[in-house]
Length: 160
Image (spheres, rainbow, N blue to C red):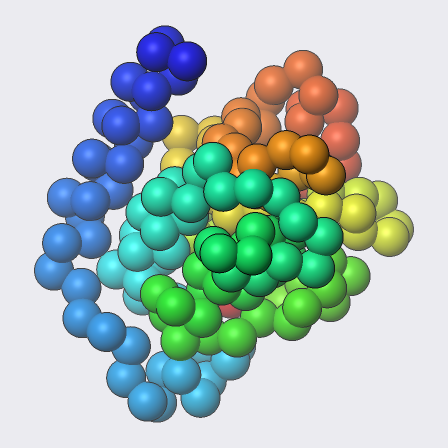
């Protein structure tokens, strides 16, 4: 666990420096569900998602107190940090925002897994990593897109 903590803290600290000057979302941005996020909002999303690592998984969960499933985590983070309410299901998330290529990824983008029928989603936080709520009995965690398991999965990327 100690070897894991240092990279997470380094990533969080670097994102914090970028996101220190942010302001809360305006009412206009709250109402623009598919508007592009500012770099500050994207950074806030990533930092907040990293702060939720360790929260218990719960199917249908959408708050830190109740736990999260993957789409509930995304909805909670986007709503609280950018005033954007994404769709509630993974299938709907696969059409949320604009499709982007892997080489265009930036913090706050969505990672959607599954070919044809989407099965899972997470929030990209930089350095090839994403935060997600993976499965029953687990917790929200930070994983790498190039890990043995995730590199074998079909992934698409979305930018609200």
